Each structure stands twice: as C-alpha cells, then as structure tokens.
Image (cartoon, rainbow, N blue to C red; front, side, top):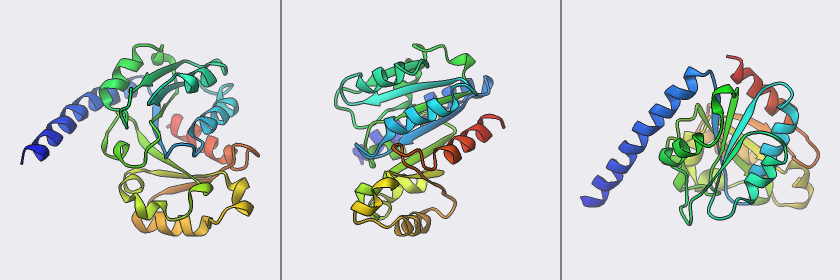
Length: 216
C-alpha cells in the first residue's frame, strides 16, 4: 500500500514540526487559530474586522496563505500589524513547515494572538496540523446550508464555526438554522458565531471570544 505509507510519512513529519511550533507559541503565551473556509467566504475580511476591533487591546500577527499573489497580506499590512504571506504556488493547503518558515519573517514573540489564514479550500487543509490551538471554519450564507454534510472532516476537526455574510440572508436560499443543525450533527461541540463584515453584526461577540482565549 505505497500511497497510504507515503501519506502517513508526510503527516508524521508535518505533526513533528507542528508540535515544535505549538511549544514555541505556548512558551510565549500566544493564542493561535487556523482560519479555514472555501474561497470567497470572507476570511480576509473577517481578519480585517478582527484586527480593527482588537488591535488597541492586544498584539495580533497574521500569516496569510494563498495559492498566488500577496494581495491579502497587502490588505493586512495596511492595518499596521505584523504579517507574513505564504504563496503555495498551486498547493491546496498550508503545512506546518510553511508556517514555521513564515514565523521567521515576523517578530511573533511579542504577540498575544496569531491568526493563520489558510488557503481557500474545505478539503485538504482539514487534516494538517499547523501548530495552532484551534481550527476555526468559516462558512458564508452564499454557499448554502449543506456544506457541513458535504465536507464533514472540516467541521469535525474544527472547534469554532463562523457563519458569515448574514446580511445577505434575505437574498440567498440559505437557512442559518439548517447550517447549525447540519454542523452540530457532525460536531456537537462546535461553538458558533453569526457575523457580517459589512454591518459588523456578531463581530464583537467573536472578538470577545478571542480575548477570552488570549487571556487564559
């Protein structure tokens, strides 16, 4: 079974690096989360709103992952926080080695919170530990309410679900209640937030949760 053997070796190597990252971040009391979603769901917008709400209270750093360009890192840089861009050149997810290299590009030791924005994908990133404290999956209302059923591994491995773009609910065929039911059927322990980066609905609740985690 060569394919299974290769996959196991790749994940084992990744997990060793991820554990080293976790030890380093915990040594500096940095709370970190891996933000995951499909493309266009609003990850970078959520990161921007989070920084705006919290940067006067805590020190935040960001690692941006994308298939091409550093456009997202440019957006974050305008907000005056440390940011490093990872360009995977076609790779569908970040791995711990890439995150380890990105950490050398920012002065992370003084951070309270590290946000890792993963590549837009609901499949590949689910199985890769990046050394984060928790995985946060973001799902926009424009994607419909069946995504938890179609991509169960992502929702099973996450601790937090953010339902984004709730301001668009009048215009899309989507039920927030159905999203919650489907997601909780897969992972009953999910903590759920409802947000809009346009109206700022739910952003305070989300940011208060981050503050709680950072102060533990």
